[in-house]
Length: 159
Image 1 (cartoon, rainbow, N blue to C red):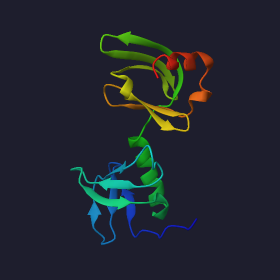
Image 2 (image 1 turned 90 degrees about the vertical axis):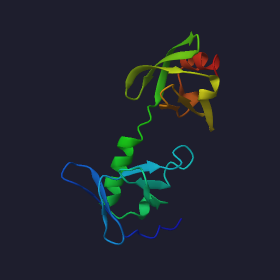
Image 3 (image 1 turned 180 degrees about the vertical axis):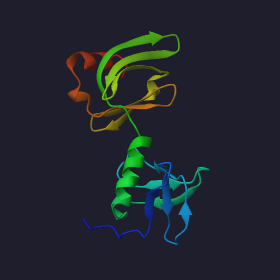
Image 4 (image 1 turned 30 degrees about the horizontal axis):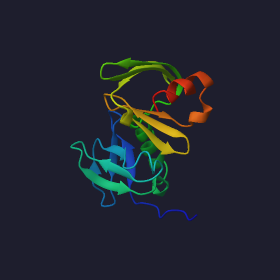
């Protein structure tokens, strides 16, 4: 695998700790926000850098092409923005009049959320599932087989 061609850009933090981009023309774009374009299928590639007004300034195919220390700033900003809780244990799934309420333990602690339909549970292949709640928050089960027996049994009723 070849090393990507380095990009002539720089990420810096401003006085308030917000991310700024200095593009290849030397123009500084304040308060930019990185967003993964294909977070479920190409999680390590294709990052859109957006302005405060949510207009795309730049698309980065491979973050490895961003020189250090800018790459570290970019990846830290992505991690803060793209928080996806990992479901570790399913305690209960309660049927509601218009969906289900899930009570789970994630890598960030115990929580509950509501799921509208069975279509809100999507297979990503290789035993991975994403569950999308009413607020459009995504929860990930990276490997159904690694769940405890009780959690798997509860999940089987709804997926």
